[in-house]
Length: 371
Image (cartoon, rainbow, N blue to C red; front, top):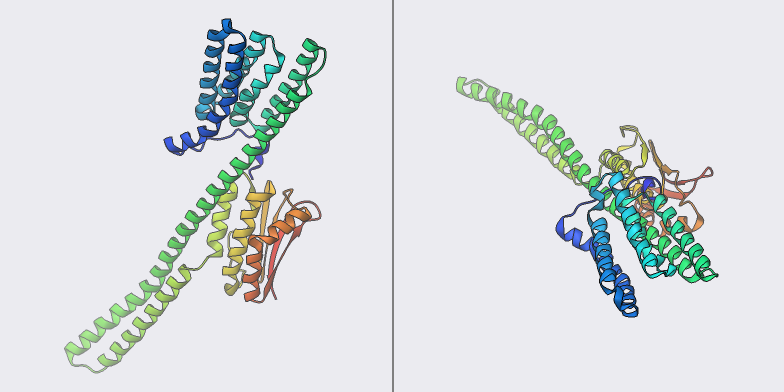
């Protein structure tokens, strides 16, 4: 998960077009049912207030949906202004009807603050609204309204938690797609270079030898058959090299994985410390170690809440360490029970093992080694 998603970072908009916008606004639209139920109730109790209350509810609804759907296009000051406007509209209900418990309608402003502001700021706004509700009901009624206050507090925590999960999932999907794209691009470039190096030399030699054989045949000189035989050998060698290169292209590359996770962690706001070359790793171990790096980094992004990740390589070992907070016994068991269990089987096939667990100074480590 991106560290900023739980702290001071401003949320970004991931625009997926009109269909994505409609899908995003669906839950917010359903959430407005509470507002309109309360509006109808107040209009029924006070018929003289029907026009202002329905007008206020309509303005509040439109402002809320606009903030949820398009507010992230604004700069920080604009977002703050939108959230402030929603809070002012929400405060109008308890003032208009003289009912402090209607401060619960500030939930729409709190929801907008979660969408538009850093989550820490949204949390403070939510808890401030809960305290305001508690104090105002105590002043007006002589006793605090704990049920509505608890409702606002729980609502704030629920919205913040759901938003954290949604953002983390979006970041994970984007990171996976980025890793895939970079791995494919890197492999294509590597194969292009390999084919150029292999075929460039072989085809040049074949061209020279076939030209020499032709001239020998034209001049009636001996040795043309030997040159043709050498051309045949070179052609077979070149074909074998091409097949080996294509076969290797179909495998996971450790170098490509390092390039991919570097971009993925960067886009997730996690600092990466890792080597740029994999020459020290035994060739036979590079493919299984690539899977270790991929799975471990995926878990760093998904579970850890880390700000830093380090990848270390040796001839027969690889280690991925993060400084996250998911190193509890329960997290260790959960992670081991999922993707990393498959890595243990891969490493066992080459005589190795995978060890996972917490780091003494805090964090989590995945280490694969082959004896």
